[in-house]
Length: 171
Image (cartoon, rainbow, N blue to C red):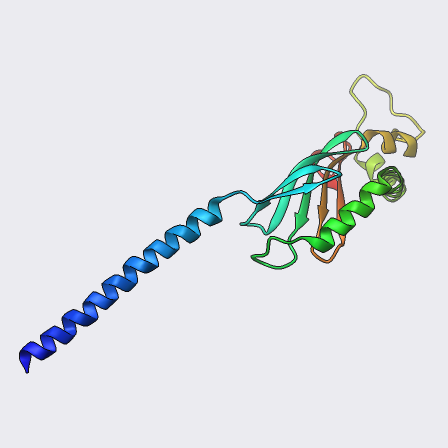
């Protein structure tokens, strides 16, 4: 009876060892596949590479002649598809000039008073009665830094402010 129990224990141990060896092999294959870059080619931006950690495709493109980051969120966690975000990207880039112009004008109208509150003239300048920054100046000074599109197709345009709000961005 002792030998039979020992044999059964050895057999169970051998099965576990074989299972672990197979599991390690499978995990290694999965890890190697996981490490391979996944690239999404777009007509508007070119290559966007999947950042698996954040579940988004990322790259750099030109928005009305200005270089900016582009981020498309994947459809689901762990997915490599970004169909809805890609549709929005196509729509935005078809009328990029209109979207950009409207976003700049809206930001200027909403934030011009804040920009002038933050404005500090140089020491050698005399304070003006007129606002230091006009809406037209505001529109010209901001520039695109990122386009971020969520999995549901909603999007945000990030604009840098040329120091009007120190290092803050406009979204």
